[in-house]
Image (cartoon, rainbow, N blue to C red; front, side, top):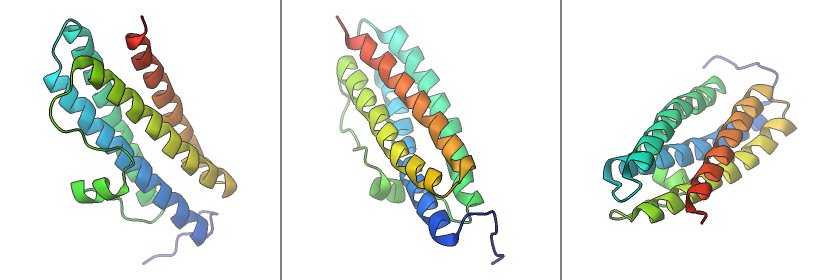
Length: 157
């Protein structure tokens, strides 16, 4: 294999890539949940939630590609199986079809979990002066914080 010399020592590069694997797994699990809920949502807010979930899973589809490509840039294989994602993700799968309100709550918690995972990876990237990973992760955090806020707003009375 060719030596990678991008100004990040190997130990830091591998640690960041491992953190990004967790971020990828959380993001992909959230993508699957959001897509599932898009297909199966019912109730008074059907149209609003159906469209919102579609916007969210489309954004997540782009995000997982960016994260996986960053892992590859760091010289590490990106996980790409359900098994690998299940082992790496801090987001649990959902059985059955929850109510629309529960879907909103589940997705809110999922986005908040992605933010927590991202915060961990951001610290690793910042400590290693890995601006590229830090920028990617920071952008993801901002998007997930905003989405969680929007989902929480749906549940306020």
